[in-house]
Length: 130
Image 1: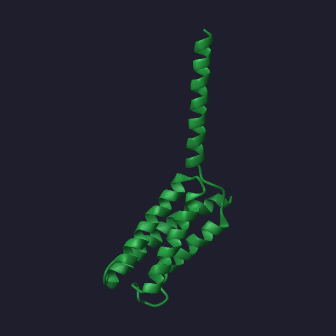
Image 2: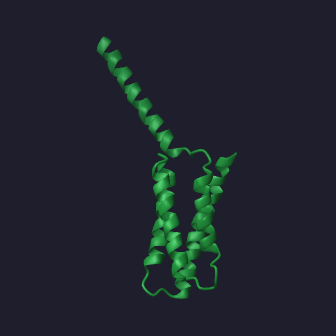
Image 3: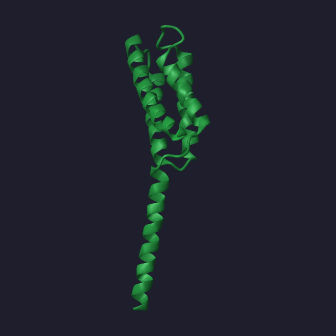
């Protein structure tokens, strides 16, 4: 009987740890103004090129840099969902930056994809302010 109670307590204890880990990784973090600022800057760069040159190298490199910052920053927040969102955005910016001689249409479409992804993240993460 004593062993059964001990085993039951152990199972409950392990289950609780798993539930806490699940909640910690899948619930949104509190609003973070630093993270949000980087995300806004990336969104603006993707949405509004300085000139009508959608393939302008300096802007593409800055977008890729900002997405790298977001991935690194979020990796230390212990929230896998946020990190995965930023990794997806990072793959878009890297693909655009590394494309050899892309056409203006390709750059415009890729930037629109980045803008949509960051719009969605801004909408989701902005709700954390409440």
